[in-house]
Length: 261
Image (cartoon, rainbow, N blue to C red; front, side, top):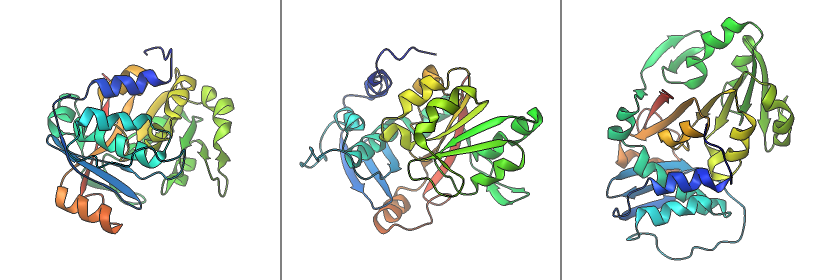
């Protein structure tokens, strides 16, 4: 694991890996999701609201992709959402995800219904269950996350907790004692990822969701699995982002996962 001498090191490493001669052609900050399209392809991210005062007021089209990717460091979370989408426009491409051994979605029959084969929680189910008393923390209240409690000691951390969730500052106390950590890719947008990865040193760590930057650089910072997506259909992605349509996975995006080697 690369030492995080500064929290920005992770971001700078990701940004430095983006080509400097690729131009942004289109982007949209949607109500739920965002996309950015460049000459190399399209990337997506969750749209996170709030943060600092808006600083970028000009059109990003025609700018260099690497320059727009630097917005991932913005404390205005809408800008950071576009920056992460820019990172994925570069990294979440089949030619690059193939190179890191990614596997792609395929529906399979499971006890709780039809779930994607590359659903990270299901990929780890048998391994976690086999431990008998594994401790699992999930950053972000994912749909159906409660199913983990059937076979492990589950803690869910949320910025706005509900039910049995704990507030996210509990990460400082809980994560070092866990066996597994599942963390939403939104932690890259809100800048909590570096600290969470530092706390998870020695903990099996999986990053989950469309905002996960599908780059092997994250393996160097302690991530054991990337469970994100690649754009399967740009037209449907544009429609889903602009309309807030729910038909995002399977039609617009293709879920994929890759493990550290």
